[in-house]
Amino acid sequence: MAEPTRTLIAGGVVLTLGADNHVIDDGAVLIEGSRVAAVGPAGALRAAHPDAEIIEARGRTVLPGFICAHHHLYSTFACGLAPAPSPSFVAILENLWWKLDRALTLEDVRLSALIPLARCIRAGTTTIIDHHASPNAIRGSLDVIGDEVLRAGLRASLCYEVTDRNGPGGADEGLAESEAWLERVCSDDSGRLHGLVGAHAAFTVGAATLAKCVALAERFSTGLHIHVAEDRSDQDHSLETYGKRVLVRLAEAGALGESTLAAHCIHVDETELALLAETGTIVTHQPQSYMNNGVGAARVIEMVERGIRVGLGTDGMTSDMKEEVRSALWLHHHEHRDSRVGFLEVAGMLLAENPTIASQLFGVPLGRIEVGAPADLVISEHIPFTPITPDNVLGHVIFGVAAAPIDTTIVDGRVLMRDKRLISLDWTEINRRAAELSPATWERFQNL
Image 1: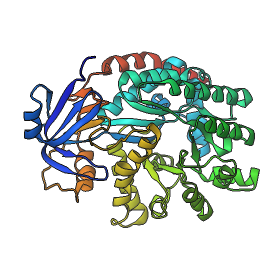
Image 2: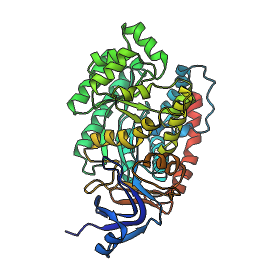
Image 3: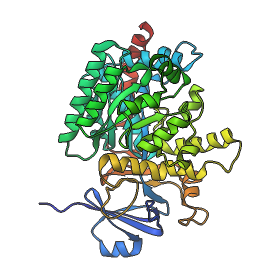
Image 4: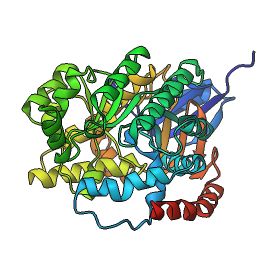
């Protein structure tokens, strides 16, 4: 059996992050096969491994790849669309998203995934948790996305959005697609695919369908991925229809827990915050989306104080977690009218909580550079121009790394981009094909 290839990233400022959070000036990371084999001073590792392929970091910052806790790859073709003016969040869903997802074919699904996957690589996002919907192309849609994730070289947890809004047949098809995907994940040997059971939101998922989602998740020992109280309309519907608030209803249905991702949780009350903490349910925060939709801002600073795990996602607005973390910080400064608020919490979402969430889902240590961990790491163009220490790493990431391009992206030891050039995907061809296909998608959208 051939020995694993050795690659040495040398001559950069290595930020290991994780619990140890070392900063190694003129550091190096040795990769053997798909794993980190050594971390330390560049001189010592160069001498010990003279036959390794060298990637020169040239004083730039080497750190773990970023993780996106909530994405919508299918939203890609919304770029440039001009839907009807939408005075409310529900109108945004009806005029844009629920028309776009119904317009998608399987080929649209493929290209809608490829473009943000390529953007992930370019932005240093190496792991995503995605929530997919394509009501007229349900069966096989997660396989299509999963195949492209593997081709791109990234790591992804996928789910299909089960909902009753397209009738009982649509809900059943969504459940069947979810089951098929979870079965595939069970037999996957790449280590880069995962599955959750997707549900759109409580206001489009009735009691019977929710029970089926919970049963399916329990059968495969996974969790749900569901939008929660993104707008007040979700709570209004729950109170009018069920006489209880959204998270109370979900808790009673057995839908909450340490493996469930509850996206948004903007309009929740004290009882619901207590439920999130008690059940260990994961909340994901998507600040750019909130500002774009005008739905408010989640009380994530308070959630963190209560011990609720809060991750950071993009909601499909971008694939760039560097952009999202800065937006989150500015949002909370603005919301609280206090520049002291949110720095540690927001940085922690990106650099501590997202890795913890992803490590739990995939069963391997992600979001840190340590011996034995998957070699998911990036080289940022940020060359520290002020002193960098373990105590100020967060500031360098948010104000330095997050403001700089990514030069090199590596996942499982495979180089996906080097010198800002995509290797695993053909960026020009993907965009050319999407430009050919998307006008027909838009025509279907306009005819719905």
